[in-house]
Image (cartoon, rainbow, N blue to C red):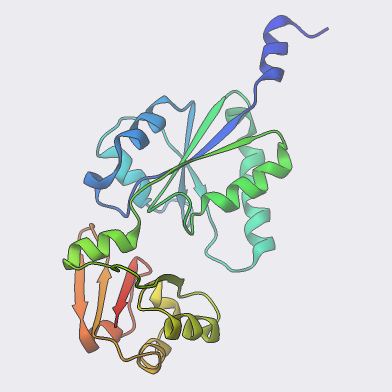
Length: 241
């Protein structure tokens, strides 16, 4: 027989809330993001490996004292490896999330743009088809980069493109040739091909790169220096004709 309390639990629909906490500067997290995280029953934070630090977690801890549980997101393009790893971790955490109505996952930048939350939600949806998704927006890396560099990203009818450096090189080149300004996320993925690709899609009146924007060790490079291979994935390259 199902008791009244158990029946109420069955009737509830769990919610995973992807919360954009901005690009890393604790001053750029929104009031709504802080409220959602503080009220969540469970807060998971993405890390790249067991025991590693989390930029999203550091942003939260600058404002709140909440318990966070790390979830490792393997840095791999192999979807099966990533899915299997996330599924195993969710199964291990099942006692925690089964007793939680709201689960927050803070992610750097904006929750709807290249966010790791999408991978976790996809795996979780298979384990619990009724789970709901909510997105809380945050400041994107290209917005911070433009602000740090003191420049506008696009004006009027100019076409502004956001491009992942992990995309196919030919696709990136095609997009760059057809836009007026662009932001390339993770240009480190292009390594030594970065310079040749950007130059072949030119000419550009302005080229600048912001590494570790809003974080200790922030660096802004302009012109030819911006096209050297970055040594951090927390890097954004801005281009404008």
